[in-house]
Image 1: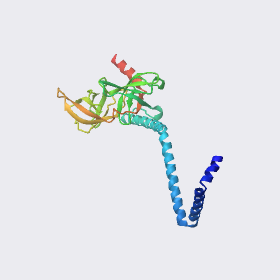
Image 2: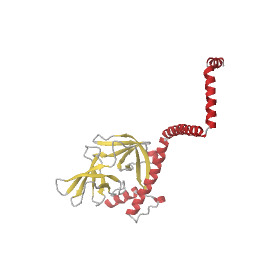
Image 3: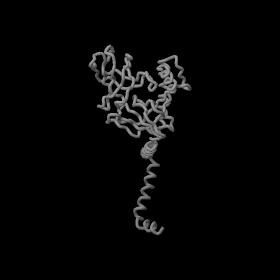
Image 4: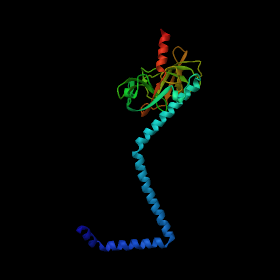
Length: 273
């Protein structure tokens, strides 16, 4: 307390000047409408700036929560879209939302390799989240790969950038189908093989999943035709496909579970006996 009194005594001249200046400023603002309006506008501008900064800080620290909310909303929309596509492509299948064929879950990528001969991703969902082998994995842009191993809380995804990967794919406009493989070179391209030379292939054509498996539904994007050439036999094309996904930078992914997969596989196994 004594220090405060000493401070006031030492600076009494400045403090008196500041007090009188404040009183004079207040009287000037109150007695002149022009000055009053300028003061109010300046105060509003400062207050608005402070509130804006505070809001920006709050939004920054809330981004993680917002991202989770958006990912969950995207999951629901993608699930509805996938089942709508199935309904449109096959009117004999009942795909009301309460009786859907595909279930979608979100997950985050913890590890991603793309420069090996066989590349994998590790994601933060596993058996405790009802994730199983042979579930498809995609992003909002296109396919990523297929789950090939699971633990309690994590799963490993066989990337499309793997020489072990074989995915049924087609040219969107013509429905000509082939096998999507990877030559082990660029992480930005894969190759679509066994496309008949009767197919009217053009640079820029969209390549998507063919739907001839129980893993991916028909119509999931893969990429576009960058170039193509005839194979040695002269009967088929090998197409260079520029991927929609940047496989070197994968964050949030969607896991596709075909709820009819067990029944389909059982039927196919019975047919092969």
